[in-house]
Amino acid sequence: MGRPNDYAGDLRWGWQCPRCDADVPVTRDAGSETFLWACPTEDCPSAGFGFSSRRRARIALREYREAYQNIYR
Image 1 (cartoon, one colour):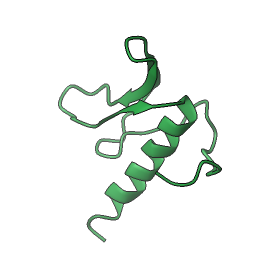
Image 2 (cartoon, rainbow, N blue to C red):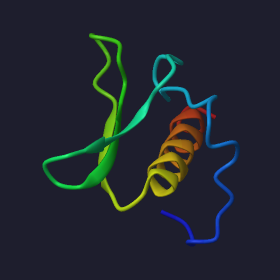
Image 3 (cartoon, helix red, strand yellow):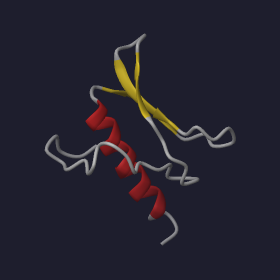
Image 4 (cartoon, rainbow, N blue to C red):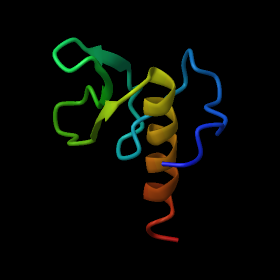
């Protein structure tokens, strides 16, 4: 993940799965008190977990999306 001061964009909406473009919510895991994101589409395995804040989870989701899109360029 990038620097802590990276711009996370609009934190309210617009976060999409890198694989299938479904809207992805960022939620808090009560068991570990960390944040996670997981694609809500049943046949999509994309997920990220263990983030210390909602902002960091969204930055990681954005970076994963950018990296995934650059795989076949």
